Amino acid sequence: MGFVSATVPLSETIIIDRSSAEPAGVFSGRGRLLLVQGLRAWNVDLSLPTRPRVTAFRIPQTIQPTFRCESWAVWGIAEYFRDEPWVVYVRDQQTIVRQNLFTGEVQNVARFMSLSDMCSIAAAPRLDRWYFHHEGASQFRSGDETIGFCNATFTM
Image 1 (cartoon, rainbow, N blue to C red):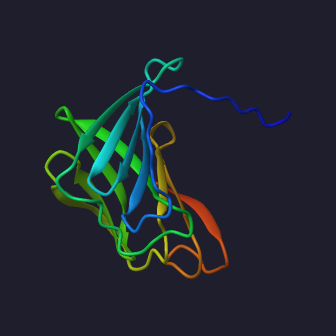
Image 2 (image 1 turned 60 degrees about the horizontal axis):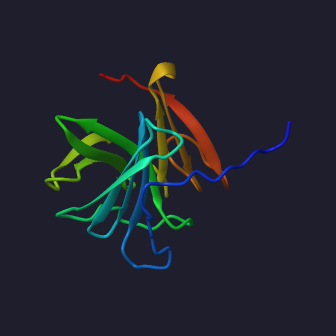
């Protein structure tokens, strides 16, 4: 079985400057994708897969990861509750946070002894797991590259 790719036209163009000093984030969630760079954000509604609807908006506070990924973005989880978009990402080597994109409010989701340079996380609620990637030593494993998962509990 080979790799299949396709272009999906969006309702609006999104431009993210991969060379910018402003942190960028890609956050996936149920039926949506949230993209963030600096004080700009885009909600991509994926409920219409033939033409996903993009809504651009400004945010009061940038996302605050303390280190840059080797890639151009921080990768995390998009949430939407109380009619507001939230993003979950690794803020530093010990903390995963949730940030409200409308208000800038930041909440701790979990604290750890060591997440190494982790800046890519994803959630699989149906499997009760969250997935991650990092390099070097963390509380989960030491090695050149680590991709793994941990059990999780989700409230819908």
